[in-house]
Structures are given as structure tokens and as C-alpha cells.
Amino acid sequence: MRRDSRAMDSEWAVDVMRRAPYVTVSFVDADGEAYGLPLSLASADGVHWYFHGALEGKKLNAIAAHPRVCLSAVTRCTPTVGPKDGTFTLQYKSAIAFGKAEIVTDDEEKIHGLRLICERFLPNHMHAFDASIARSLGRTAVVRITLTEPPVGKRKQYDSDGEEMKYGRME
Image 1: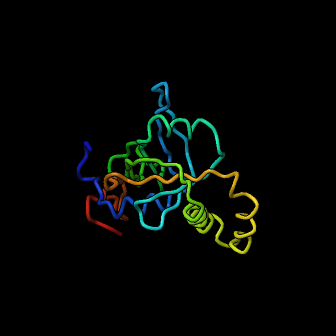
Image 2: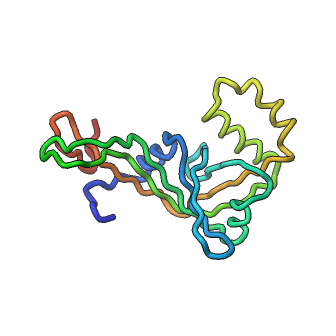
């Protein structure tokens, strides 16, 4: 990281990943081409992240060829004019992590992953979860990404006096 003063710890980075509306997951396909897309991920422990999709397609083919992935998330991204010098800039909170993606084959773990996703994105509709699982579990792929190292966080944020908040300073 070029600007160490903007670095944040792993716990902070996991929080960014949990709050982001989606996390971009970057794969490498069988031809060595990069393939990244925003996905709706959920995690209970900050180490194992789940997403779901179709039983076939480019994501699953890429995982079969190259299971290592990169995750990136951004929240509170706000274009702004620097309070002290008037420069155009961007305030943000971001996180990056690396992991290994695996297609989940155990039904119990698939249900666990899907439950985490539903609890995160549709918590008011959990009453319909069991019926949905009964209808679609067999035709839904679930992927688990296990982080292989702690995530890294970074931010640029100004306080109410227009001073950039450096590492460890929270408001």
C-alpha cells in the first residue's frame, strides 16, 4: 500500500466487506483471462464467504481452472472537494482480500451458506426460506471462498474540521 497512513486493520476491513452492498470477486478463467464481477457475499466468521448462482457458467469454470480469487469492496464512496485545499478527491472505505474458492457439495453447508446470504439481504423474508430451499437447493450452486490471509483495509476520510483522519483515528 502506497499510503500507509490510510491503512486500516483486518477487523476494520472485514466490517467494510460485510457492509458493502456487493463484493467484486476476480477470477482467472481457463484461458488465463481475468474475470471480475460484483457478487452478493455473506459470512458468519469473516473468513468463509458464500455466494450462490447457477449450476454451470463462467464463474464455476474459472473456479475449476484457478480457484484462487481476489475480493474487493468499497463503501461510503463520496466524491468531494478537499476541505483544506479545494482539490477534487474521493472519500472512501475499502477492503481487499485473497482466498480460495470451492464449490460446496454438502447439502448442509449449502443450506448454511444460503441462509447467511438470505439473512444478510432478505432478513424480513426468512419465513419463506425453508420452502425456497425445498424448491431450489438441487438447482443452485453455492461457492465458499476461504480467505487465505487477513484482509487489508484502506480509507480516506475527513473529520468535521477538514483534517484527513489517519490510521487509528475514528469518529
